[in-house]
Length: 191
Image 1 (cartoon, one colour):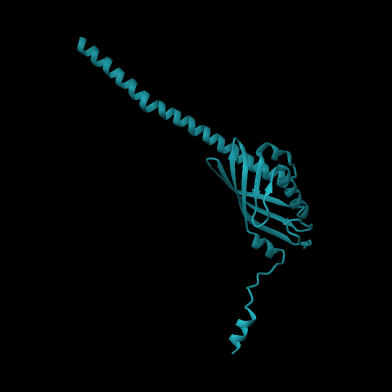
Image 2: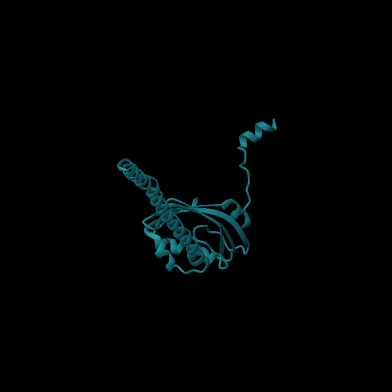
């Protein structure tokens, strides 16, 4: 009888050790996965609110909630925008040049502390935009872009905007003209 009791005790110990080594880490991993999913959803919600409230409606208070004090917005080929107040001013300028401005979110992807937001902007160019000094054309524009936002401590610290500026400028009436050959090259070709 003693041997059977020892075997059962040993089996229970092995079973307990198996649960400890296999099941509990899985629970911890599930907990971490859940936390990551919750954080990703918070980042997606922030992206939606920034577009809907600040860009589409002109409610800039939302920016204080989601942007770090030292926030930097890179928007090549334009100069960087540094700080929340400067970013608010940039959005005001866009909304002034395009009073019917509407941005639609096409997709949001989050990976770790980076979020990518793909969007489409539509609007009618009826005002002057200081960063791009073009007189109002009255033309409607529609172009796409993507923003890559870098997060730290629940706030966006840096944002890279990549948009179809060539298509945008062409919609405003600009023409893409190939470079002209140098006068000397032209003369040689004539010979």
